[in-house]
Length: 308
Image (spheres, rainbow, N blue to C red):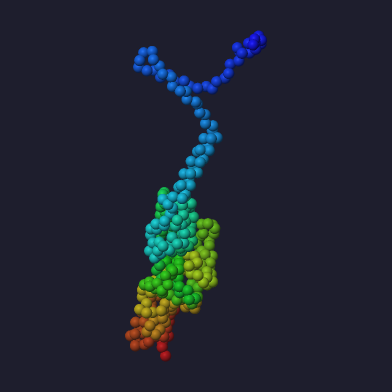
């Protein structure tokens, strides 16, 4: 069948497009000999597909780390404990079994300070794979304050904190208060920018009066440092088994086991008041006289009453 001139022209001009393939010619050691290898097609990976693979790899890695036992907290290591146990602190924190990635050091530090008034300072360090180190400074109790059938501990600065262990045996002076102690001198609150010492003390006393849960009592300066020092000095000089009390009428008092009361009043000049008391007691003993009461509340006018 004869082709038309137009068809012949189209046949000559038309050339089918072929896929581009790379050809590799491998030279052999023999001269003039070559071997042709199969062509390898080129593969182009788009950025979307690459992003998908990267996201899948990241998600898998994150899932593996999140659920790995290696990165789960067992318990916080606590340094500086004296009376509080590490088990008690870890129970309150409740971070056992949590992924280390969810632990917030600042939050843990705040919880420790809020829940344990025994700690005057706390620092938290979090490190991989699952380590939490808490360094605390624990307040040291110097006396026991009993008021309205509630027992609290007091440190040398007058701060209070609860006696957590029931019937805990502490060789500390005990003072039984019939009324609230005088508020410490007003101190400037750096946060409020004003003198707020009295406000803090009133808040502490209010909690002492109204709270039925001593563990909820915040650490506040209940006593002035001068009061704490006076109570300790008085306890050192009181006879054994003497009952130390604080009353609204006579301030600091001790009930001598030999049958008389000693009124010391305010905590100021405690050393001098003790000297005056001993002088009065020696004078009465020299006269073979038994007192019923000795008052050194006012150094300018001490007095005593003879037992009838």
